[in-house]
Image (cartoon, rainbow, N blue to C red):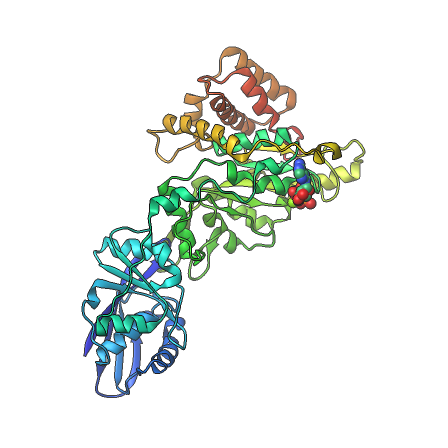
Length: 510
Ligand SMILES: Nc1ncnc2c1ncn2[C@@H]1O[C@H](COP(=O)(O)OP(=O)(O)OP(=O)(O)O)[C@@H](O)[C@H]1O
Ligand SMILES: [Mg+2]
């Protein structure tokens, strides 16, 4: 007898329906065709054990399984459940009404319980799109799939629930999730708050500007000055994600199987990979492409702590995605694109051991410092708008009881500044905030009056700022003006923006 069960394959962040055809006939054998990978081929052992432990069996007949379309590669162990149900139905061990209305996915344990799968959200979106009525999947993934409206999502813990549902018409409870409540509930709770940081008013101000305009930022300071502490608090002052952003981000995390019993991700991600990370882990790739850290940071923050410690090749591969805000991975048979629009926050010590602008630095250690700074490529630094020096907070400030301003207060100003940018770029494609402006937009929105233009010219000459610093200063000035709700960039905005180019000023980066 021939039976068809529907599963799904995830490529990039999108899913594509896979039909699992099972035919049970006279003879003997087990044939699996249609570009399955090794994990799927091994599934017969898991399925055999799971079935026999639950009073079923793989029949001693000729079983042919075809996974269609045949030219699409299928990977992983998530087809176990569709294969098992297909075998049971095709061999007459269970009845199946309405099987064609469901997408069924899940990895089996030997006792028949279910293990989570990857990409449940993308699969649910695709299944709904194609008019399926239900999606049966492991309970652990049910919440992320239930974000999708218009399809019933059934989270199950054990294969028995599925066989009894189809065979005996028992009921399965659909997962119900109120997206709006879930989305609004989580938004204002943060693990780290700026009110924990004593002093550091200048750095906080600079981070507020970074958040307001979506500017990349580097924090430079000696060990213990609080760089890591400050960076971790950046997501708490970023404007809230809208529902589209939340869905985009959740999809990527879902594909990586990184969502544990939570539905939609409502908070901007903060990722801080260790400096030993490989190119592939950072930007994505592999023979079965997977998103990297830059995509897991999509709509949030990628924090590279101790930037010069990262391998130069790793920093190089990040340049293109930083510019394009997406990363494309090509393989012989297919190409996948992952979004990667993130804010880069980097930190570094000014030298392996010493301190920036230290009067006691002698010429040897200056050479050492240059070498250290030279490890970060110029083109990468080129994409960082704000350079901020962080000095340790003196003891009396550190021990002061008074709490600093809370993240919530700072975030209000940031959100206000962002709203102006949203209005400004309402017509522009792919530009949402100041950091993304191209040169035409800079000319249009960063107009200087004569005295300001003169100030900038003088500063550039006096401080020996490079041409590349010019555009960065204009963009940052625009954000500072937005924070003050000013229509035009004024001299004071420019003067502040110029301060944030200390690495150019030091003349080290050539
Ligand atoms: N301004 C501050 N307010 C409150 N605590 C602070 C402040 N600065 C530093 N600290 C304390 O010092 C600790 C060390 O700070 P942190 O790890 O952020 O420094 P760092 O600059 O990242 O150092 P390293 O270069 O060694 O990584 C923090 O965990 C915090 O407890
Ligand atoms: Mg640190």
